Image (tube, rainbow, N blue to C red; front, side):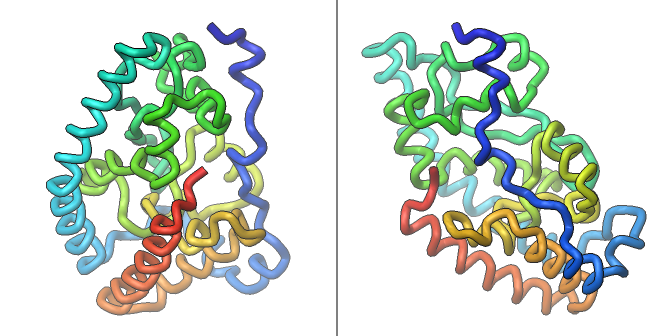
Length: 244
């Protein structure tokens, strides 16, 4: 079992988000004046529900295959056994939600007390490739660990497109830095910033503010068109196997 100090050592990649720059503060002052989460948009919500249902149906056989792989690997290597699904507490539109994922790491890398509280830090070893199970390595590479979040989309806790929901720890740090996007919008599977994963632009908050600005300016249908473009860009990242 990992020691407490080993568990709480946070990988620097886990929180790449930066404070709002002078460019953001000057370019989007109206966003910082909003003091409550933004209302859902009709076509965005309708699209989210439809896509979530379709993907959950399509993902069902994938979940079954992965579950079988988890069981087989657990029998061959007991330290890799354990539940396939877990969740930690995250924040979406200023509200704490369960963020569901597929387990990537071996049991010994999970801090048990933190896991009972559903703290992100209990599972932070997933950023260390050596801690992952064989199935976990494959799952992470192709973002399959995010598939359970379509259930969150269906429930209305998340959206397909929006700023990535952060753990409570990282959300509080993000707000302390002065950012407001994750307070204003439901968290998403993909975002303008997230599609830059693997580039120096990853974590640049200007993309999230641009999305909030477009959320305010566009019609409900116009916002859906922007979401479709972001989804297309995200698909290209996934096809390249950009997960890490």
